[in-house]
Length: 215
Ligand SMILES: Nc1nc2c(ncn2[C@@H]2O[C@H](COP(=O)(O)OP(=O)(O)OP(=O)(O)O)[C@@H](O)[C@H]2O)c(=O)[nH]1
Ligand SMILES: [Zn+2]
Image 1 (cartoon, rainbow, N blue to C red):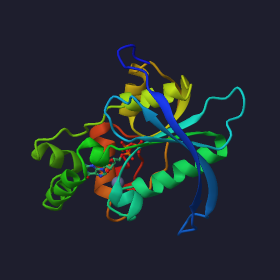
Image 2 (cartoon, rainbow, N blue to C red):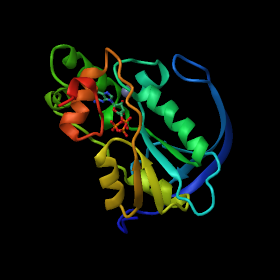
Image 3 (tube, helix red, strand yellow):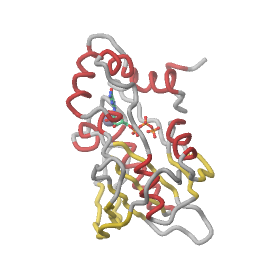
Image 4 (tube, rainbow, N blue to C red):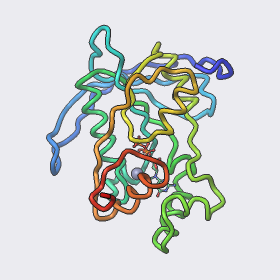
């Protein structure tokens, strides 16, 4: 990890059984998470690490850095793909063994109220990035230093990263972690999130294939 970033330490480890009910297109599953909290994270936020499954010896863990999305993760909003991505991550990491980092970076780091302001601007025609800029906020304000600190505290130096977002891979590598492979997340398109997914593919190079973007 970047030598400038201070070390974080594990504060608490507690086991939480998780149940994901069956829903359209997805079977239900159960898993058990070892949930870790930390002292010394650079941004002072209450990020969580969920260790899931049993990584086989001599393999690197599968890691997902999931940014908080109250509307998608909790209420099942169809405006984004966060809810299905979170569920997919929990299931795939359980199967292979690894860590789900739940990062308190609501709205790509701008916070919940600002995200909802940005939604109102998107309803008036701006795309997801233009709306942040129109509010005087960064298109994507996320910094993954705290995530790197958490991985270091868990003894993880090398990993496979579950993401379609090249910025996550780039930032983790800049922070000194070895991302061996990028494992693409699924594309969970709905009528309400197609424009959002298109903007992620076109503006920030996410590896997202959509029929509307076919050459
Ligand atoms: N500002 C803003 N944030 C949004 C919007 N839609 C979703 N988000 C936030 O974007 C973040 C989604 O992040 P991730 O699930 O990590 O997705 P990602 O950066 O696109 O990358 P991968 O899913 O890893 O490919 C969450 O914090 C959401 O709250 C939006 O329209 N505006
Ligand atoms: Zn979301």
